[in-house]
Image 1 (tube, one colour):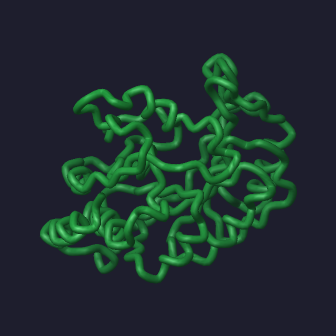
Image 2: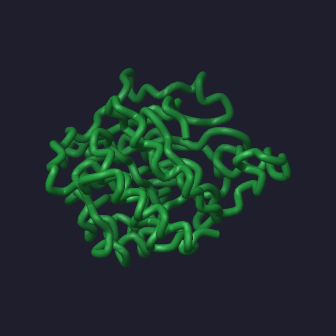
Length: 263
């Protein structure tokens, strides 16, 4: 985990799960896999097992130690709703987010079906933002799964944007992030696709965040769209104490239970 992140729309990252498997075209040039596989076989390194999925219960309580409020991207190096992450462990992660309620948590998944399946069994709180990734029109169905969850703040990460999405139903959506792919083999993004999404967000009153153009030299390409940056965020919600667990002991109990299911 890092208390400082270079990702434009968050402050920090927290990875109680590491590793993942590819399920759709947006995963083709996964930055997290590329990073993790560099350290496969390096003894003692957090990614000694490369990008193989691994539960890391010793990381569960870390956000409790951060006193200043942060936006925290949960599992920047994995997917919390991966089919191999047990429900009890997912509930342990949610328990921590309920306790450390000074933070806003940004949870992102491509496994929208499992998200909806587990929705009623998770302790949602206003500081838990839930998002799904959508890379092209074929995967817009993920938005419908998200919309049917109990998350207080719902967002879309449209990155990498690989084609026109056409008309997007933004009802119930609070925030949209758009970005192009970067790094080796990056696929290009058409400006018209970006403006199409931005204009729909503006009409619907949905916060719009343009992350980057991407490409092989993403810093040079920058992140301006039509002469300006777009850094809109959903309004922070007031955290109700009634939505939160009451003690760090509860987190410890949940974490201990999750270790039984860890692998």
